[in-house]
Amino acid sequence: MDCRSFQEHLGDAIDRFLPQSVEQEFQAHLDLCRKCRDEFELERLCKQVVQRKIKRVGTPPATQALVLHSLQEQYAKASSSAEGWWDRLFTRRALVPAIASGLAVVVFVLFLTVQRDPSEALTDHSASNDLINQSFKNFALVRSGELKPDFVASCPESVASYFKKSSIDFAVHVVRMPDCEWYGAMAVEHAGVKMAHVAYRTGDDWMFVCEARHDAVMQSASLSLPPAAKRALTASNWYIDPAHPECNVVMWITDGVLCTAVSTMKKEKLLAVLTTR
Amino acid sequence: MIPPVLAVVSRSTKKKHSEFEAEALPHMDVLYNFALRTTGNEDDARDLLQETYLKAYRFWDKYEKGTNIRAWLFRIMKNSYINRYRKETKEPDKVDYDEIENFYNSIRAESTDPNDLQQKLFGNLLGDEVTKALESLPDDFRTVVILSDIEGLTYEEIAEFVECPIGTVRSRLHRGRKLLQAKLYEYAKKQGIVDGD
Image (tube, rainbow over the protein chains, first blue to last red):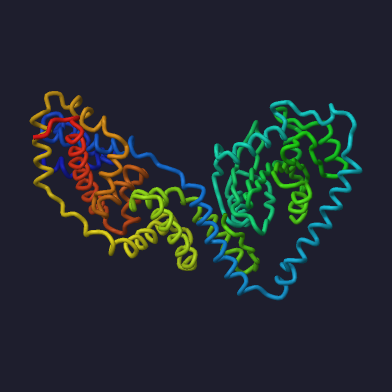
């Protein structure tokens, strides 16, 4: 191989795309020719410097929110111009909150009549493998920005599509919030249990929901629930946890999926949001 | 705070919207990084990213399903960048091969131990200086260096992204890196990491 031919393959060698058929010749020339060797080393070093010194950064949250907001605006424009009478009937701004409030009252009454248990041990869940504790920790990490969702979108359908393409093998229930700035999603597996995490950001409020197959959680030796939660879920499919005064924790079962929501929203608002699913 | 938007949902647009978000949004970080390295500041990168996504959303019907979505988005960003900034920025620098040749000669002349010298040369540079050197490259060269050395794309992928033959990608990458070496050498000289001639 001469210098000219070496130059033609220089980039391939640095980027590790050098064909096997010329590897030996290339190496032989590299060992013999000082000029070409210097050039090769410099170019390789240049690539290494760029890789080491220029770090990839994540999209800043404000920029991400701006993009999602712009898309939401486009979406709203397109939707409002295309909607039919049937859509309008069910998207009336007054109708949805009315239904939501009614359902929230029903859930709240259920909570008052079924959940109360005088025994503190029943609601105790200090275990590190407790699903509520885990959800609470993840909620705190998402809020602080330490845990970044793998996927962020402006509408719940996009998040549902994301989970369909992921390893999650159950239908993830994504709550539609009319004023939600973004929806974040993560598909993870913990101790053999597949879990879908959905984060919601709406104004100053946050909500984090962890979803997993109810039977998988119950059968898992690595996950636990406080006895009060097990009882309430069996009785009414709902449980509101009293042990976190700084935020609200609600659990419910739907279509065999156990959902755990942690939120800064007030209880009534949170229940209204969750019951519009 | 961004004012809330009441998304009135119609079934006919819901599918399009969710498809778009599921396909296009996972590539936001790659696009943002490219925008940041191309424009050189966060404000312009944000605007460019927003414009790219809005255009992609508007023209989603034109996207051929199953093809490389990242390449499609990238091309939209590249065209947006050209339309938006090229008028405002100076024409790309002419490549001064004499300067690069001198650079090589001076390196070789000083090089008693090539490995040590090369590490000394670029190893002490700060990230900011490397970023500036990269940003100062002409657009076409900078693009392939970013896609190859930062994003780790193959030549084939880069060729698809920038819509040119693989040979052109190779050539631009080689010339881009040479230019970059010259820029970095200048920084190293200014800092006294190496002796200037």
